[in-house]
Image 1: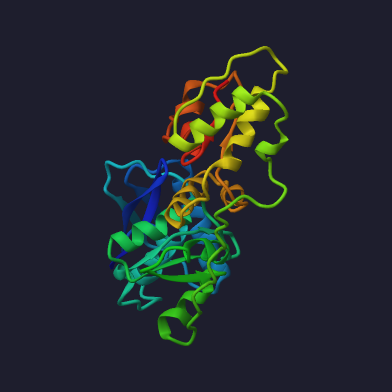
Image 2: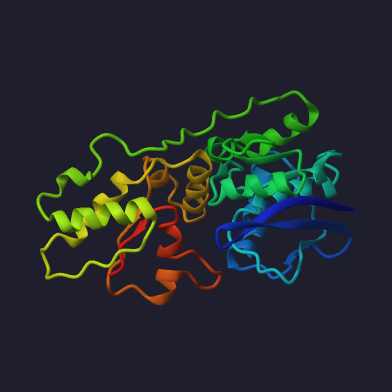
Length: 302
């Protein structure tokens, strides 16, 4: 029997849709995942197997093939566990979910069937809305983050065993309360008033902030260059709601959402030994660098 589900994989700071196709048929017991998965995705076989058994489901002793489409897109991370488990339950006849193809799922599974948070939940919720999904099912810890996105239902689950109640209508969880987005810096944050003297530097900072210009500061160590640059965000205007959401999406994809919710514009000061990939992004799979993390704010070049 064949079943499909929707999920996502992170590509930089964006979430790319992935179609999970699970086929269960007669043959020697085997569990294969194809579709260019990385090591974390391939290891989902053991996590899903243990989670199903420990939640009271039956793991089918048949030939199981999981295809992650499109096959040309590299899949990374453990965030596909929940979608694979739901599609496997549907394909084996243990979960009659007629609307499974209209719902997106993302989340890591523990061996006891509980859900664990994943990076990029905010980007995944936005991708679910753009792809026309009715709702997205996420781990409970990711629910408040995903609830920042309007136009798509957010269902937060704590364990795989809650899916039958969700499908049968016995359990109808409320939409999680969205995380608060603080648009301005918190009281006590670094302020330009800390910069004493140096009127020419202060004027240059004000001109750069007003016009959105780049600024080069040259001087001996201890002259106050880094101190002045770290105080520049204090005279920038507060983040607009759309800007704050974009900053939060970038931080979520990097696993640094807490810093984005502290308020104000981000300030990044990379070390002078940073690599090119760390500065502008890169790697396999590609990840954002310091230039991306400083979006909508200040990056102090070494």
